[in-house]
Length: 366
Image 1 (cartoon, rainbow, N blue to C red):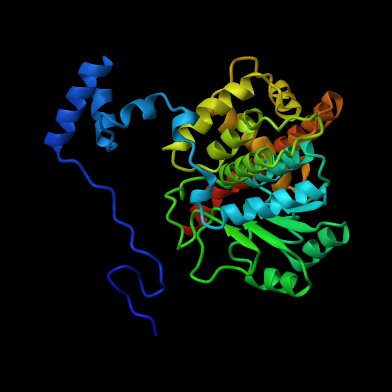
Image 2: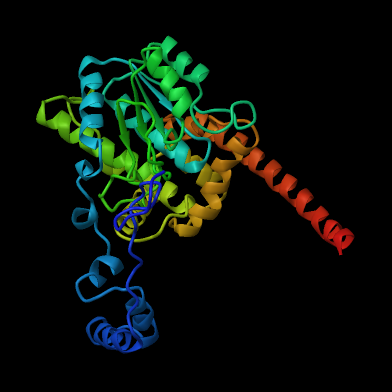
């Protein structure tokens, strides 16, 4: 039986030191410094200081920029290996399979890969499981179906870190799989060519606060960089514009309710700018059907777009999110948006009906 040690628990997980709490005196001193330098109300400065910010970190917190906060993808375990595997597939123009999750983070993760790899001319097959028929996470039958479609490499996005049995079976079937996830990992990793997850026990990147779409974005940024180094371009002779897909990263970051710190703040800030240009036809159609005519905000991400994209997965139409996020035809996008909006209306009606029964149940129990 494993025993706890100075460095790890009995399960092998590393101990994490809790954030240092500033004393009231130190907080007051830092708040006064912020008030003087930033010309902000003292009450706000006190709150900022209580978050542990100091004169070196406050600027990036208030005005986050990707050029200063975006980490190198290779700080994550297995990221470089995953990048090279994907780059080789792009070079050969071989098909890639995607297995995603049915929530917003999963849809955005799959959409990122479909858009960027598709720009390189790579055939991309995507499977989003039916919540009711397949449940959560990879299953062997779906992986075999992707393989049968011709996928030379399969990526599981926003899932897979606990899928030991299906991924072991897939490996026995000769499938090459990369896991890209952000959920907490166990001591034993699933069998795969690469496992990119900042919440691996042995990952010391400090990026455990990222959602899956953000992890996917970093991997894809590494892929584009590797392709540039080898002269591999997209179908126009250029490289995909990674800034153009930041709206998807911002959407997933907001809807997965991850901590708004570090690069996540830059993802939100820059992603909202991209969303405001309405370049993604699917998101444009969803904002139109919601009659949103003002510049997008966090409310737009979390309370307008998020619930609509989640509705499909909750009511048995799990692939609608990826469909609309990767569609470039305005008419098709509008049609999909109407379908999604109807599903969201149905979802709200079902939730209201359930809530209406709760007081009666409470009365019976009391």
